[in-house]
Length: 312
Length: 251
Image (cartoon, rainbow over all chains, first blue to last red; front, side):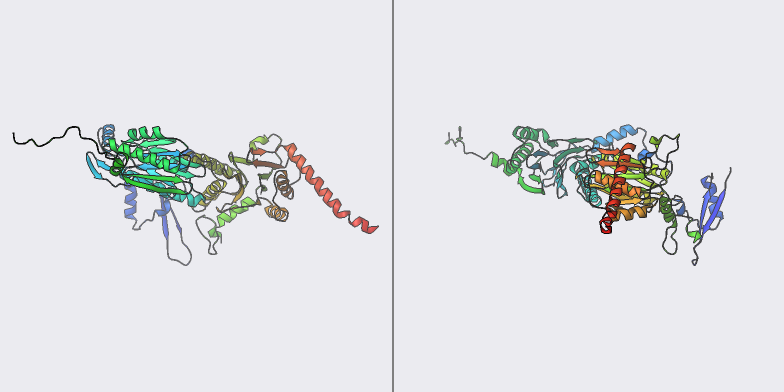
């Protein structure tokens, strides 16, 4: 086995530091250890790691893209089955109702606030509308931790983009960043069904992004287990030229009706408005109170009344 | 001093990175290149060394486009330029893919300058031996820009600049004669600057113009000749005007 050792030392005048760089060709690691043990010096190999791009290790095309995240895979005999099980276990039914729509004046975003674990209501006061930055909102459906963390991360990326480019990121760009991140984690069990709503140079923007890696541009979206009910009310009452108050009322009603019929949705119906000056929270009404507001209790005539019968 | 110019990563005692300075020397030996920014147009001009008879001149384009709205001209090592241009073109497309928007001129300049800087701070590599002139229009605001980068990795925006051979005389000329121009006037200014240091004639200069609507357009030799002729006529007229007032005094 051929091996050649090259020694070179660089000393700077006036100092006593000497670094020795050792280049070893074609050596197996045990032999290298043997040599290192026998030469009684501590070899400093930090100089061998260059900051320059490693030549030939990846093609020109990949240069522009950062590597996808990865972690060590578990050791199983049936990895595909294991992956399926993991996804099934983590995939909650996205028990929630969120909706957003674009109209003449901007974007309206609304959501409920119930968190459920199976049949147990774990919280009635979850903030499902996440403030990414003063002019962009994200909604939460699916895993709460996943949504919160990745929205926060998106907020960081948006701010860095602003600082580097001296202009705000567009809603298109922000949703694309999030979608690319979620795509790179595809199949690893993230559960995120979110809408990115905002106002940028081109006007109002609304995108739906999910953990399967899908990204859709649209005018009206509703996400969650209560979405069919919300769509019913939303699609029926939607007009492009509504005022802000009308749009807010439509959004509120849609959330209310979804919470009425869907067990996994409830709590407080929050409504946010995104306009040219950023977002503003319009209202947060308890859906129980909304119920009695929309369907107040009317005194009705009693048809049959039970009375005490005098001793028989 | 000799032992401080061998490896790129070593500073000399008086704070110089000699490899970077030698790279700047390589730039000074390269072709002259000039860039001028107008109000609605940007112009790049490059000195063309007389082509060998058998060489296909179309394969040695010195002014290239990085994207529909950004173009680049450079002075220095042309092989290094090819690598830098390829990486920049990929970055332009990658940006379009990740944020669904075209790059701004400042962004791609920053990227190219960053690449050039990376190679001044790594072991075993040498800096890119070229300075670039990057022109383009902002995709949203339509504002034209001209930037210059150099082997050290610094970049800045300019109204007009020159690099390569005799760049100092060209820059002096531009400083004396620059004013806000548009359209054909900008082209003429760029060519006049180049003619200060290059033999006159359409065969010896390559000029490209970029407008917001039409993108990059390389000027034909005939067009360049026509403009050169105009410039010479103007120069002659100016000379005549200078000499003429003297005449009445003589009588």
